Image (cartoon, rainbow, N blue to C red):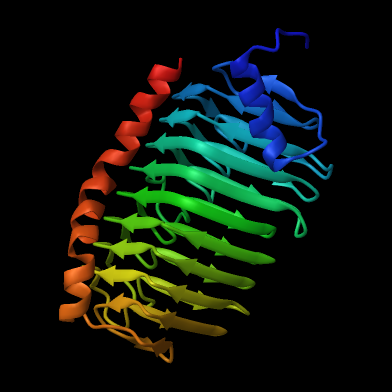
Amino acid sequence: MICALNFSMLLLLSSFSAFFPDVSFLIYKENSRFAINTGNYWICKCFFITISSQDSGGAISVSNSQENCFLIENCAFSGCNCVQNGGGIYFLCTNGAIVLKCTTAVACQTGGSHGQFSYLKAASNRIMEGHFVGISFCSPKQANQYAANMFISSMQRWNSLNSSYNHLRDGCGVRFDAPTSSYSSFLTISCNIANYICVDFCDGSSEMSNSNIVNNSNTASSYGVVINYGQSSALLKLCILVGNLQIGGGSLVYLMSGSLVLENCWIQSGGNNAITKNCYGETSTYIINHYRQCIDLTRITARTINHFMFLIGLMLK
């Protein structure tokens, strides 16, 4: 592809190179379903609207064992769906890497088991990252389906991810599944409704910090709004867990197996066998004074961030 090296193109090239140095790539800017089995791609400024597939990946489908690198940036997904996994994005590259940046999704769903918006699996020694990603109003086509966002394997980094107003069997916020390592910060998981669980830590090593898990509901089980199981080792630091409803009984934070530590968090109640260090209760004056504004902003952000990003997507067209 030959094009003029104007200022905007230099910015785009540097964006890809920042994540994948020394990797050549192709640019994809069509607003139609993207299905590919080979190559490195920078998917930018795409507006995927009500795109359907009888396979996995309603709007984007990538499946192979090659060392592919994908950057999905400044894209919007609305009403995308598929019969199998990954209503918006399906990325299954056992030797690949993927980054989502400044991307939003609304009302995506799947008829399969996992990933109403995203089903992502990358190589255990490659990166999977997300920066300024918003997902909301996702619900399954059928009952007993899982995970608005399914993140599997790889070295994961998530920053400023908002998953709100989703309604699923479990994993309606996010599921971290067997990561080599996972570090997430400034997440907002709010106003979701789950039959079982909102945030899943399954196997691997995960750390979440400076995040809000607020106003979610677990309607049918005792497994908690947050669960840790398998061989998972999870650490939550400087997080807010308030306003959540555990209608099915049991603990808000549920440790099935592995280890789970909450450190310097504001929590409405404890968890079974979870370790708490320097945590504050819901009525702590210290925490109320420091975090009341954060909670108020979270409630507003949960409703507006995806719509704001959606408008940004329109302006980028």
